[in-house]
Image 1: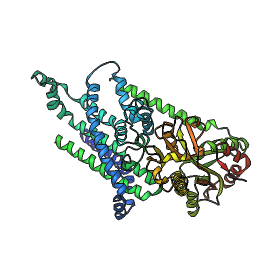
Image 2: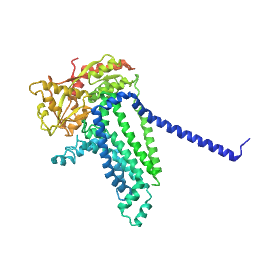
Image 3: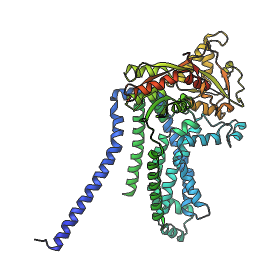
Image 4: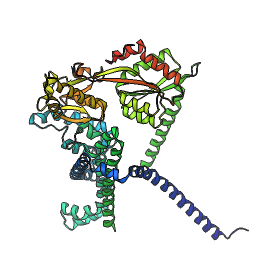
Length: 275
Length: 274
């Protein structure tokens, strides 16, 4: 005996709703496992005592310290230079804008080692620009400055694209309303635009920072590898992996912990602003 | 912006077609010879790249049914890959240490030294550090690029410096003076070649065979006298898990034969007298 039409519908709806939920759940859960299990494998591979021993080595501490300092500087500089870039790309219409927009994303496509070579043949001793710097006594390769430059080169697109998306999605009417109330552009940016795009900025900062923390190829190519001046944590991990997998894993865990803490803090900060 | 999804769709379909084309064209490209064709997977140290490619070409001409596929990498990485049951038939290492490791783990059959290599000092062709002898490497302010100690070449370079320090001509402080000029510790020999070739470092320690035809015009070479040099020994062996053991052994025999050794000598290896 057929069900009344209404009942049939609702039964169908409930069924499809649950099957959709199940599908989403299964897909999402399998992805979390795909990402989570390899990371967990790193963390549980070595006993905690051994991890601690490897981490407390002076070279390891030095590398972690250098990573924190250089990525802080590179992220700060990325924001200082990247925010105007995002603003120009999101707001101004001019010929060649699409080209510039694509150009800014290029460093993410480039294999990092190639990015390093590009920096080397530009800022190196005999590079396009570097050759004018060396008579002034400035050489960039093998210095901490080069580490920061490599990080900015590779990581800044993540911030710029995120900031640009935030600016593009922003309803300009709020800003225009401020102008009708005679707000200066700077005031309008500080009080209207900035608070509205803050979540986008924070997520961009998080992405760029994390990318800079993990940077290896461009850094080792452009800046080289020397403990204390250019040996960041990923490079130390990479070199250690050649001979001593245990200490490589231990350092990776530190890198993971720092990145995880940083990204989580930014995320929580973002949610607090929203809520 | 309205047309974005359509363009995107076209791009995606285009990529899929390309991928399908690539996938279908690969097997079609290899003709099937009368005898059963086999593929030998040769895991070889990076420094063997140019010479082994040449050997493979020569070998394939003599044995058209054997195709050789190479996996070039640092010996320590190859050893790890074989230990994790990567499908290898032949393992050619740039040092005895990694071959011993593989053999101790029961991964390979008896190995044989098939070639030797020596270290040299390379300088950029314009010689910015004004270096004319090994002694100049101890001059203050010289930028020296070295491999990390985990890399065999890095270990050998330090041995060379120690050997030179023991000779009265250089003095006991020579090694430490040179090491204080080191600006970077690279993870492989090719990275040292790259930085010296670009003129970023004034000098670097590499294998003689790394001064390949492609970079020879950009580099100057200072030889390290044999008594102070470290001669790297390259062992080769059949991998135990190989399903083509006899073909793998035949390939190794060719490498050890005068024909194989002649090719290796062309790439500046020190050949073993067979």
